[in-house]
Length: 166
Image 1 (tube, rainbow, N blue to C red):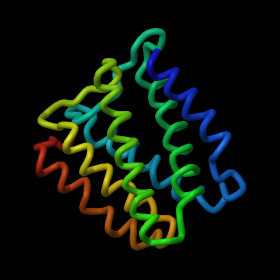
Image 2: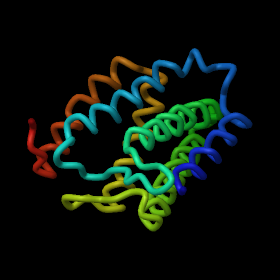
Image 3: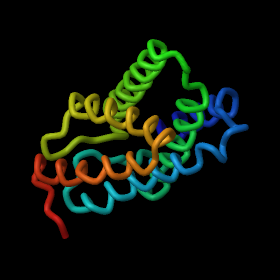
C-alpha cells in the first residue's frame, strides 16, 4: 500500500509542479536515469544491495518497478524543471533532493517496502543520492561527459560489495 500512496502522491506533485513544457529537453536524462536503474537490477539480479519488496495489494516486483519508473521520471521533471540558476541555491536545491530521497527511502524501509542487503545501509544510500543528483544535473548539461564518468560506478560497486557477475 505504501507504494500506491507514494507513487500517487509523487504523480500529483509532478503534475502540479513538474517542468512539463520542457519534457523533451529532459527526455534524455529520464532515459539515462531509467537505464542506470535497469542496469543495476540486471547486474545485481542475484546479489541485490537494495530492492523493492512489494507489499499488498501489489504482489509483483515488476509492478513495483513500474511505479519506480514513474517516480524517477517525475523526479527529473521536478528536480531539473525547477533547478535554480544561482550556484548557491542550486547547491541547496540538490541537497534538498538528496535529503528528500534519503528520507523517502527511510520511510520505505520502515514500512517494509524497501530492503537493504549485503552490507548496504542508509549511509550508503545518502552518499549514493549525492552522486546521483549531481550526475542527473550534469547529464542535463553535459550528457556525454556524464556517461563517461558513469562507467566506473558499477565496477566500483561490484568490487566494494563483492557482487558476483553472472
